[in-house]
Amino acid sequence: MSELTPLSEVGEFGLIRRIKEKVVLQHPSTIKGIGDDAAVLEPEEKQLVVTSDMLLEGIHFDLTFCPLKHLGYKAVAVNVSDIAAMNAKPTQITVNIAVGARYTVEAIDELYEGIRLACENYKVDLVGGDTTSSRTGLVISITAIGEVAKGEAAMRSGAKVNDLICLTGDIGSAYMGLQVLEREKQAFMADPEMQPQLDKYEYIVGRQLKPEARMDVIYELKEFGIKPTAMIDVSDGLASELMHICSQSGVGATIYRENLPADNQMLEAAMEFNLDPVMCMLNGGEDYELLFTIPLEDYEKIKNLPDVSLIGKITEASEGVNLANKHGQAFPLKAQGWTHF
Image (cartoon, rainbow, N blue to C red; front, top):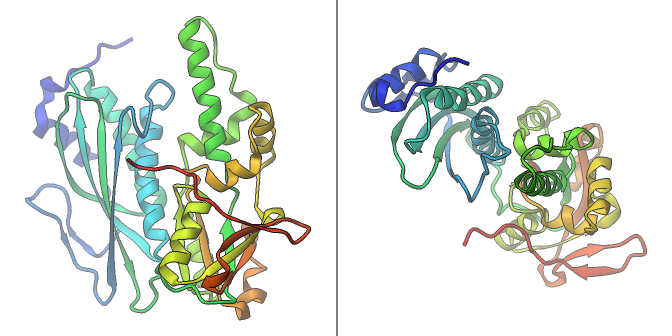
């Protein structure tokens, strides 16, 4: 095994040079990227959307089971997901990191390899950022910039009564993947000789460690001529996100338990952990699927999208936000997902 290089050996400017060497710019709107006091962007006749997200070691990720390459990829994906939730196209990101003395040059290379792969996949330019030291572990803060045509941005505030509620992919998987990883971590700490048993959980563990932003659906919606009236990404739990839309739109909603999309691996894991799978779907976070509403007249268009489920309808605000079962009984929905403080 080759000897690892301490960060002090290359210094901040040497680290920046290493990062810049592997950056390939893809957008004509990027006039100047890494290497100056600030990036220069020229988006032409588009509206800019900007989002920022911070990940802290020990709070948002655990390096016991989260590879640095996966972490770099995920850090980009969760920001791209916010751009997608605005019905926009991501174009640039900046990356700020704070690292402790225990990190080597090779470790940071691994982190940025994941960032580079995500940039390549989502077609975004890394145009700048900052590096500094940390006494409390690794901190990653990413700002993502996107473009959207005027009038095409999807806000949380646009849902109307009788709109259909749609959801991409499946939910609850990332939450159950985290339960599996936490269990295997505890087993490893009790016996460092043991090997993690993850084979039968490959899908849900992958959903936790390397989620994907649903830009594919954004492009499909444009192709089918569908503009969501409201949209949000599912990062803190479906129930919580639906309540955000209803609160900001001044409406109510009913979603149907039988229509909630679930993966079999998630369902099996929930039973194994003695957890209610519906609660996992409603309140488990980090799926980064898209929850959105569309006008009723777009039903014929949306039904042709293979990875979109119709899960409910928007109602009058006076009816509240409810979960209905197959017998037609409705129960008030409660948000019990991730809270930040």
